[in-house]
Length: 295
Image 1: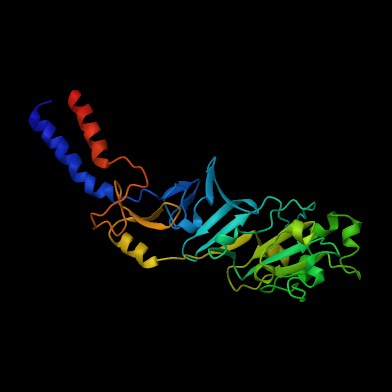
Image 2: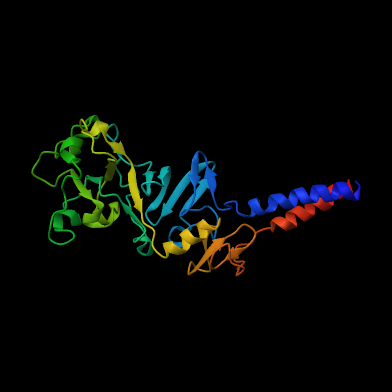
């Protein structure tokens, strides 16, 4: 290859480098779900409050917290919410007993970032008479009540109750402990079937003020609101200069990821950090160019 042709090729590659350097290197996909800020599948990307939270396994996006692992059905970035599925959750057609469900609990340090939405009801099933629910948990006040029009009265009408055995059906309207107690997450702060001494649970949510015709019309799953904590002004300034928000260290250093280098301010700054190892785009170009020239 003559020197003129080499110069033209290299010049063309260089002209692409500026646009490439500002590509969002943190955005990724798992199946048909986009994983973007504040979430990430890559260490150092996203918001530190959501690190080590999502995992992509065989194109299935999983959400892992202290209470267990859940499949992510949707990430709604506009409303800052995730929709989760627990394989052992009870629905209108099936009630799962044996205390196998995850429930929902977050690590204390994650509590400011993740909470089920206010319109999410948890229906606790088959809780014993010794359950804290019936001992005045958490403050001498029984928490069982409807949430956004969803509660046990409607849930009892589901066909699933006809398949779980007379020992449960017989006590639904009896004088003993209620076989279903509907609560909001805010009322008890943690859905822990072992601690609450319950056999199972269901969770349903509503995303619009629509009139629903009973529990068959409910959306079953856990709808979690996520909240960003920290210096959002830093992130906005970073994105305004073509960068991607990330972090370094143990999450105590905010970084603006600028493609081949990281900045503690914005991508318009020359101040950089290298906490996330990346191949320099110029290094990649040089390697490609040398290989091309050899031919």
